[in-house]
Length: 140
Image 1 (cartoon, rainbow, N blue to C red):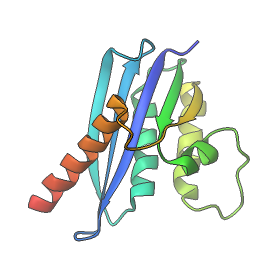
Image 2: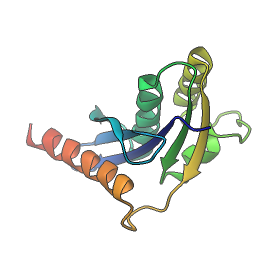
Image 3: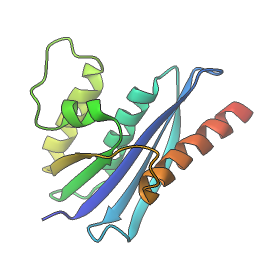
Image 4: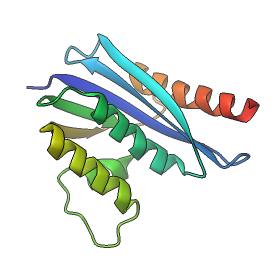
């Protein structure tokens, strides 16, 4: 049984070489907001920022729970889900960090790919949080 549903997104600004990530954690009902956060990372891609958002969301979960992570980054669902890890895989450092965190916290995680920009409220909110974080970074 799923305890939490998580939405994540990553963004990138070419003008400042800045990435952003965001996550939203909901209760299993898919409506009750538990936590949301966004951040900026310098000299990182949107893909790495999204992986960092997944890690941050997983870190915010209580130990020994089950969660479904919904992301529009298909590679994350393959890299972090049940697919076997390839040697010399891009973002290996983040994949290792994620797997160690899940093991330490004794979490059960499943992934669901969601199509981006089709009007899904939580996915769109994640995208907005990333865009806002980038805008703040560019104004500083």
